Amino acid sequence: GNLMVVGSSGGGKTSFIQTMLYAIVMQHPPQVVNFYIADFSSQNLGVFDLAPHSGGIAYGTDPDRNEKLVALLLKELNQRKEDFKSKEVGSYKEYAKRYQNKPAIVFVIDNFAAYTESNPKLEESILLLSRDGSGYGIYLVLTCSNTNEIRGKIRQNLPFGIGIQLGDQFEYENALNCKVEITAEDRTPGRGLVLSPGPQEFQTALCKRVLSQGSIVDAIRLDLTKMGDAYSTDRAVR
Image 1 (cartoon, rainbow, N blue to C red):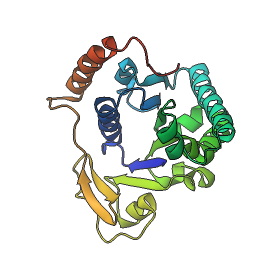
Image 2: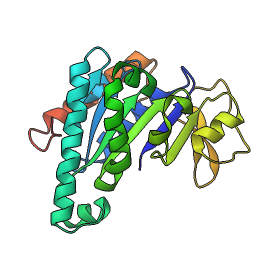
Image 3: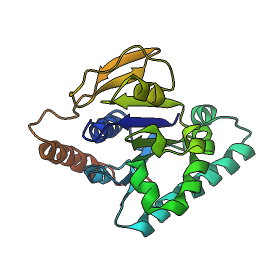
Image 4: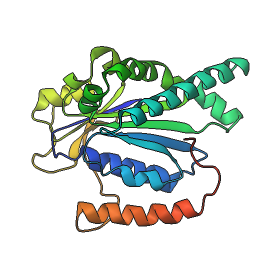
């Protein structure tokens, strides 16, 4: 389902997203999973546009690109609604088993507060995607510094939450939407809490073993360039 990643500034939210996207491209072909990215944070996610799984990336400096990305996802959602209805399929899981011609789609918005500030008229579209998308294999992953940055109606459609380097127990409870008795080790980037099934402490793994963030991006770029060369077809829709 949809996922909310809540973390302090510099706590490791973008590193978590990097690791998640890298795991997707290394473990699944683009026929199975595609992703789209709105990078309103460090712009360290742009390298993933090299992957055949990527249908595009938008930054805060390009409002037209952001609108086109959301329009593409809404069009795909409407097409899937029609296809599911005509084939009398009740869920994405059932459809994927029977037909295997529609990959799961992950829409990542890194720094949701900045995204909605720059694109206020897209918020209703994000609400629609958050409400209807998961039933048709379209999932949202939103990052924020605190849960108040995501308005209530959208927040209600984010059943899964992760807290990374938050200030206190109550912030973790808001992120995970449950009572917690523990907090993650402080001043340790990437350390947080997740429900599994109860609150558990975890450490975000770096997707590449290198010395710096810049080196991680370079290492990812090398891997994805090789992968992209191997896929002339079966790439994500742009």
